[in-house]
Amino acid sequence: MLRRYVAAGSPSRRTRLTFSEHEGRLPCPRIDGLPDSGRRMVGVAQLVERWLVVPDVAGSSPVIHPNTDVDSDLDRARSVEPDRPWTTVVWNDPVNLMSYVTHVFRSYFGYSKQEARRLMLLVHNEGRATVATGPREEMERHAEAMHEFGLWATVERD
Image (cartoon, rainbow, N blue to C red):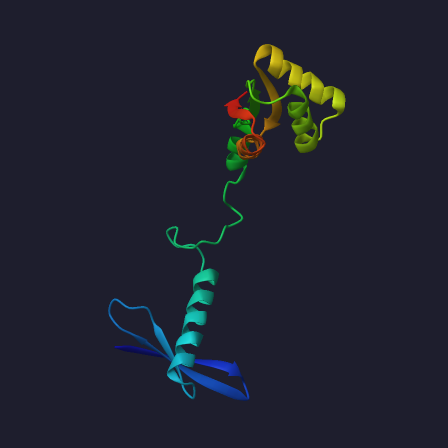
């Protein structure tokens, strides 16, 4: 067993630390005058501090060093193309009235009366209309809301 003594604290009131190193275990500091749980807590804090302060040794430190090449990561991130947007499509059904579909588009999406009517006529005449475009999660929420209103709706990629 190796013993190493380190003085800690202010010069007027020093605390003696004893590090016991056992084979296969990390150093376990013992501080005179503290209960066992307090010694362990201080020891863990000192080990964490030492681990964060010690320079990178064979990639063991999680600290990002200023000499790392971050520019290549940024270039790679810029070269990624944005994801194609998703759409919410409302389908024609034989159940809902045209006035109700217009009302749903106005109340849920906040479309003007003319835009809601135009979309309703697309649904009625062409059998479908794209009512919203955006991220997948948001389009899924819109489709679920349309289902709650009793309309047939799906989510598709643009």
